[in-house]
Image 1 (cartoon, rainbow, N blue to C red):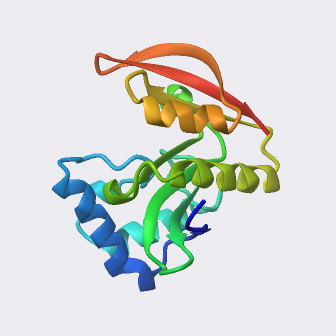
Image 2 (cartoon, rainbow, N blue to C red):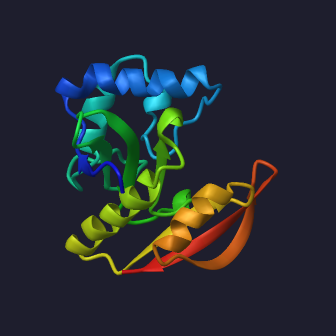
Amino acid sequence: MEHEICLVRPTIQLKDQALDYREEHFKKGEKVINGSELLDQIENYEEWLLSVTLNTDLKTVDENWVVTDTFFAVRKSDKRIIGVIDLRHTLNDYLKDFGNCGYSVRPSERKKGYATEMLHQLIGVAKEIGMTELQISVEKTNIGSIKVIEKNGGVYERSFTYENELADIYRILI
């Protein structure tokens, strides 16, 4: 890959970059930012930061959610946020079809291999915490994301419908 990235937890120091990242999605007409733990719906970055921080621990996770690690993918060469990815340690009834992670890449940085590398690094994080597999869902029409999942060992498992959209579930053994 031309530009190396690393996964970093959100911090207050990344506020301006995070908001800029979000704005780029919005300017492209994208109102949902997958893997962002609702960064696309926040009014206040500090409240979002507190929420994603509390959700990393079983003692403080929101009672309606699951323990989740959220990371920005930051390009090492210029420290720019390239993407966002999350890792849900377990699945509840709501998440059973959505899976253990979601991710997105800044529109201007797509088709450069970043999503594949982000998922690869997240698989390493999952392995470190003792997970043995990841379940990931993807809309059938999202060919780019399907390729990312397959490049990381994803195997098709089943399909489901959500809000009249057909989606597939893939499983990655770690």
